[in-house]
View 1 (tube, rainbow, N blue to C red):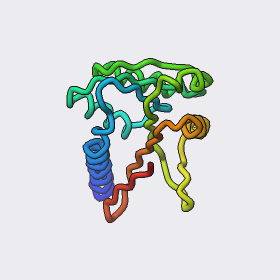
View 2: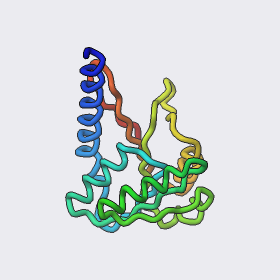
View 3: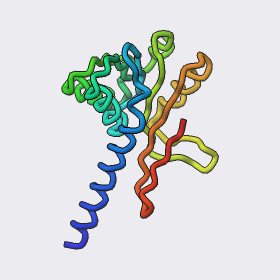
Length: 153
């Protein structure tokens, strides 16, 4: 029973973290923007859904995210919520980057030097965004005893 309660407690804290991040991050999404994201991220999905709930009109480009095609799952989740989303090939980021207003990705961790740990494919998106002066925002939920939420921009 202890393990079940502990697991429920962790899940509750993660859900609260996602909601808090979404509340703080959704104002970055303004009407008419095009957002690029890479793969399926529950934190990014929560932010986009919060912006949509606040009646923001925007378009999301999502990379396919080979080999497991997590991007297809993200596109389906966005469309199910009524958010305009288009799936793009991983190799087409250079082609679409001119239309993108900013990049929003999740992360699974941050290393000591500030680098992100995320799915393969995030790095070339970040390099291209930097070369074209496009804002790149990564959201990370941190589950710890202090319930801290860190933002890496």
